[in-house]
Length: 266
Image (tube, helix red, strand yellow):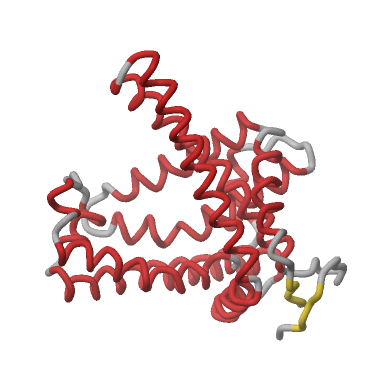
């Protein structure tokens, strides 16, 4: 398997590919994303193990959205069953995906547990158990410190899992190895991912400001709030659509074809 080293400008191409592919099948991809969000939310509210279960299934669910993107890029209409792709490819891959999910859940909950050393558990409790985040809460020094602490620790965890489900599913890589290869891909393509991330942040901000201004002019704060939520979900669906292209260009296809500099990883 070969890791591609891509130029920084490819990060913008990932963003563009995600948006254009989304609009090839907007109903299907938006619907699948809403199903994904609803399933994760419903699992999270289950008592005791709900949050851990939702976290454990997140890699498989993300893989399902990537598989849906691949179908849409070919002009096909992805059906809801594609979200279960990770568990329909055979026992070995299903087991590997569950192992990934277990590692991700354990890693995320460990970060939350460590944050309790910073603020006594206020941020972890709010994130895992739910509740309202008031301005007074956010401005508390220890709460803000815990939030930044979690963000700093979550970044390398996210990098390890960014490509891992796809590597397990499409390349047959073992779960632990997939975490290493994913981290390496994110590091080697740091500038492309930086452009990709900044591009999405800028797009969210510009669209949000424009939509809020138009909604406020038409009907005030109530209209703006009602308008922004579905728009944010649509943008998030486009973002998740773009994730597949970061994987596609970061690793050579199984036949070895690539249009960029590459290095061998074993």
